[in-house]
Length: 362
DNA sequence: AAGATCGTCAACCGCGGCTCC
DNA sequence: AGGAGCCGCGGTTGACGATCT
Image (cartoon, rainbow, N blue to C red; front, top):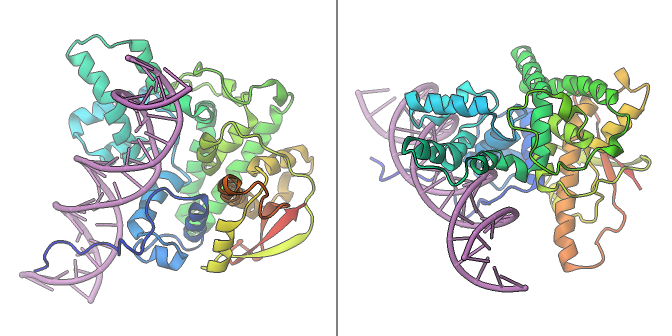
C-alpha cells in the first residue's frame, strides 16, 4: 500500500506560475507536431520545465485552437444555470454542452457571476444594480475589449475553425488537421476581411464601451469594428495576448529581407533560451502579415496553408519578444538587441515540421 | 493620492477513476 | 485480482487590475 499519492512531478524541478509566450509557443509547437498522447512525458520531450498536468491544463484551457474566449452570451449563461440545476458542479459535463467553453471557465463564471445572481434572485434580494451586475457579467468582456468585438464578430469564424478542425482531425493526424483547419478558415477570413478593408482608420482601435452586448450574434457590427481584432479572433492565440496588450500600437513590417535563421522545433534549449532572452522587438504580429496578405491581389492560393498556420506561431514568437522587451526596458534604457526582426516562420519541409526559417525584416 | 477592498481568472492541488500490465 | 501509472475533474488559491473609501 502506498502512503498517499506520489506527486505527479518533482515540484522543485518544475516551473510554476503563469506561462510565458515562449512556453506557450513551445507547447503549441510540440503538440502541433506530436500531438499529446502522453501528458506526463510531454514536458520533457518538449523541453518544458513544467509538469505534465500544467501543460495539459494550459493546452485545454487556453491554447487549444477551438477554445472560445470572451464573454458568455445570455444563452450560454442560461444553459449553464439550467445544466447546473440538473448536473450540479459537474463542470466538465456542463462544458460539454457549451461548444468551445472549458470547465474551468464555466466554473469561474458560475462562481463569480451566476451564483451571486441566482442567490440574489432567489432570496429576492434586490441587487445593488441589476444593470451593473449584467454589465459586470460582460465586464470580463469589457476589461478585454478585444474579446468583446471579437466574440461577436468571431463567432462564425470560430465555429468554422472548429468545424474545420473536427473535419480534418477525422481523417488526418492532429498536426495536419490543425494546420489545415487554421489555414482554411484563415483563407475565408481574409476574403471577409478584404470586404471590409475600406476605411479601417475610421474605426476605433478599441471599443469605448460595452455596447456590443454579449449576446450579439449579428456579426456585422464587429465585422467593421477592428480588423486587428478580427485577426485576433481568428487566431485565438493572438486574441488572448491582445487582451493583455490591447492598447499597444502595432507596427507594420517594412520589407522582408532574406536573412534566414533556423528554428529547430525539437528541444533545442539554446534556441528557446535565446527566445527567452531576446529583447527589443517590434510589436508586430500576425495581423501585419495578414494585412499584407489582404492587400496582395494575388494572395489567394499562393499563401500556403503552412504559412497560415505559422502566423500564429509568429505571433507567439513576437509576443515572446515583446515580453522580454518589457522586462529589459525596465533594466536598461538601451535594448540588448537594437535592431530586431519581424519574423516570418517558413516551414523548411513539407508540413512545416522540423525546422523553420525566420525571415527578418530589418 | 494612497491604501483597502473587491472581482476576476489562470493556475495549482489532490483525489477519483480508468487503463494497462 | 490488484498494483501502478496516468488522466481528468472539482475545489481552491493567488496575482493582478479595478473600484471604493
